[in-house]
Image 1 (cartoon, one colour):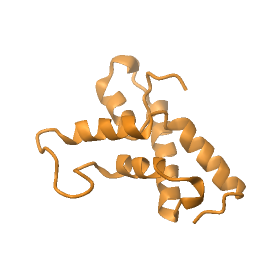
Image 2 (cartoon, helix red, strand yellow):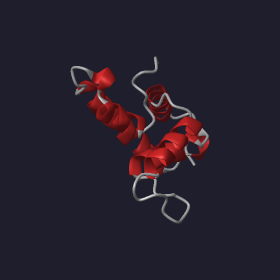
Image 3 (cartoon, helix red, strand yellow):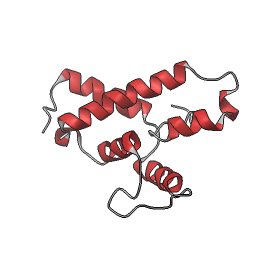
Length: 114
């Protein structure tokens, strides 16, 4: 359980929710659609949803006071990952499906205003 009065946690929470601009429902639908590719759904609770996106989805379903150490790692990794992708945006980023796909897989839709 996290200390909700910790200023570092407050900053991390705010930054994470500022950069993740998709709702949990939108992200889940996106990840499940992506996971339904040639391999289709895998058995089990994760349904074949890959790593960081699954972690983001998990964090989105939590209250700040319920965060674990692993959740904080996911939040930091997500912020760094999205920042790196945005910094390296291709010249015609809006029409670059691979770049947008990578961002949306961790809950950031670059076509949506903040």
